[in-house]
Amino acid sequence: MAVSNIKLISGRANPILAEKIASYIGLHLVNVLITEFADSEIFVKIDEDIRGKDVFVIQPTCNPGYKNLMELLIIVDALRRASADRITAVIPYFGYARQDRKAEPRVPITSKLVANLLTVAGVDRILSLDLHAAQIQGFFDIPVDHLYATPIFLETLKDKKDLSNYIVVSPDTGGVERSRFFARQINANIAILDKRREKKNEAEVVNLVGNVDGKNVIMIDDMIDTAGTITQAAKILKENGALTVDVYSTHGVLSGPAAERIQASVIDNLYVTDSVPIDEKKKEIMGKKFHVLSVCDLFGQAIERIHLNLSVSSLFVSESKVK
Image 1 (cartoon, rainbow, N blue to C red):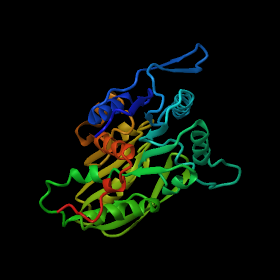
Image 2 (image 1 turned 90 degrees about the horizontal axis):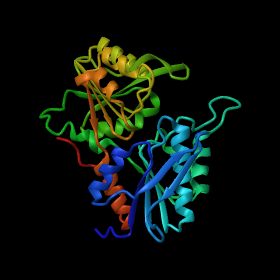
Image 3 (image 1 turned 30 degrees about the horizontal axis):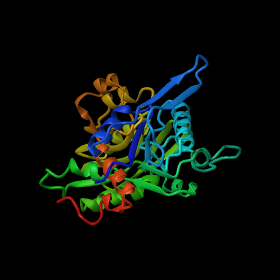
Image 4 (image 1 turned 120 degrees about the vertical axis):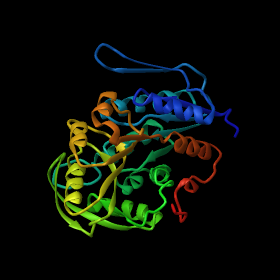
């Protein structure tokens, strides 16, 4: 691949992933000076010539979301003013994605606001992974390439000789389509957990639709925040006869008591990606049941294809199934 015209830039949110992506493509990250004034104002200076270049800025807007988002906007503005030919914001984790609609009066649709901010700042294209809601793509008036972690998750099952006893469970009704897609790849049935959320970061699972008795459960979710829902769900599944419960969640946000809840739960294995950095102490707390899978190859391939104007959809799992 001709990579002479590509430039990769990393913000401070997840530099380890950015380095892995750059290594996959065979490039180095552009030298960027990112500092803060005494009052926490962010200052950015691009230390290399990027005039006429195809620039990819790798920056998840994870915790602290407001700071990482602002840093991304400032980097983009610096690139635009330095005459970059095209600016693609590579956002492995799209923060504020849960605020995608007006669920009650007098609340914002912050996902749309973030889309507007990125576009006005000068972003020409978005590359992201497992958006909380697919409708967020429609908030942008620029191209959005939406990747899925399913191919990476399926790799963990390729050595299993028999998947006939597996069932895929959606932890809520909003994730049914994601779970159904995964189940189709392994020729499995699905079940659904109905949950009622009383307030933010608190949920009560109230009903199981489907039969998991004597089954090995795979639970699919886009993110784990405080882990309240997922640990409650695992408990209910075991109480309903599930033999094992393996959880696959793209974004391991793991806020507050999440690590302790997971460690104490009946979850057998938890798989997340490195879309957001995960504190080493939290990894130690969760122990051997916790596994991190890298998305560097997936993003590296997508960046190469975008640069060469090739299809990105070929990276998605299609009708090929795990046997």
